[in-house]
Amino acid sequence: MSTPTPPPGPDAADLRALARGLRLLTEIGVRSLIEDSGPSELARRVTAHLGCELTDVVPVTEKFPSWEHVNIQRGVDAYLAARQGDAQWFGPSGGGYRPHEDMLSLIGGTPGPFGMVRIMAGGVRVGPGGVGTASYGTAAVGPEENTEVVMLGLVATTTPDGAPVVVGIRDESRFGSPFCNLEILAADRSAATATRDEIERLMRLHDVYRGQVLSFTASEHHGNELVTFLPRPQVAAADVVLPDGVLENIERHIIDVADWSRELLSAGQHLKRGLLLHGPPGTGKTHTVRYLTGRLASSTIILLTGRSIRFIDQAAALARRLQPSMVVLEDVDLVATDRDYTQDGNPLLFSLLEAMDGIGADADVTFVLTTNRADILETALADRPGRVDLAVEIPRPDLQCRERLLRVYARGLSVDADLTRVATDTEGITASFVKEMIRRTVLVSLREGQIPPVLRGSYFAEVLAEMNSEHHALTRSLLGVAANRGESAEPGPARRSIPRPMHRRLEG
Image (cartoon, rainbow, N blue to C red; front, side, top):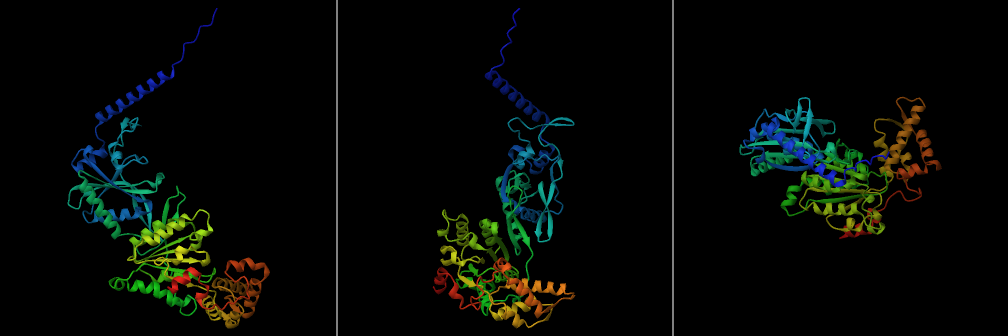
């Protein structure tokens, strides 16, 4: 008895035809459900306020970096406060948000390729369904202060002329895109645009970043850039130990221009300025920047260091918007090395140069650059007018400055030592070295059982012997101490150590 031959299976063409039929059946079913169910409660609430059908609603969307979310909230809050005191935020019930879906699609339940059918407890439902509360999160408004922001929500209000409009905020950063959207829904495009423009004006008026000390960083969440608030340091002029006349020269270039900005503009003079602080590590460049940050109490300060220098374009745009402002780039030699030192150029360098050029001469913006290697800086950065117009050397301290440093860092402590003698024994060191030496001397005193500690001459001698030993050569290097302690620690004229490109610029 022969075995029956099995029937042939469906071919590929049959399977494709079946898939097309099933898709068509699904789409017909979705359309039928939409027609039967009518607009969702969320759509009815929006269209009732706007006085038009959902198909006639005009959306106007403005996309902002995610770190502007708090300013969007401030702008919308100010807009609502000027029109009504009881505006109620609402949103889709049941967390109906899907990534990359705009607000109008969310409200209308626009079907995708296979529709938007959801199996709920009550059966099949199309679209987002009911009205719920808005979803909220928090955002920083200062170094130690947060505020509540709408992550996904809508609010019914009016245009500047009194026509109905719906304002929405939709944060995308939770799903990977580093953006937050301001979305305006109206029956007329001009009405939506006017509302958006007024909210943006209020955003700039109530900008949370104005007058703050800020730093750009990158979050671990999809690499989104963030703006971090930092406390404003308060450093007294007496605590900035520099050779005579150096700090005063810096102040004339930075502080005086800020104080006389209006008069300078009236006289046809530019405000934008560039300051380069150069010298060995540990001599006080960052400390000087901290002093300037405290002195410019009403200015916005943006600090970029290390990897955050890649945000120079965003920082420059923010500085111009929030002027008077100061952009600080620490260790700029890491990105602004002369192009001859790199094989394929330096993209970050080009961004830095374009940012400094693009600010505009009339902007009250200061660029402060610090470097330990002024000799290898890009000539275009150091030698072109309008980029760096003052280069100041922060040298290793001379005898007088070393004694002043000792007294600054020993302030509030009991001292039983000849600080002039200690200063004489520390030729070639830096401010960082003095600070660390004081700390170690305090520890020696504590180990000797002296509480509170007393800084004695013998303790200084012990600490200096240890720090000058062969085993601490790397420590001394990291603290900026001269490699050859026999080198002159009493610096000659500052111009002698200025690299040739900057030397020419200062003479010109």
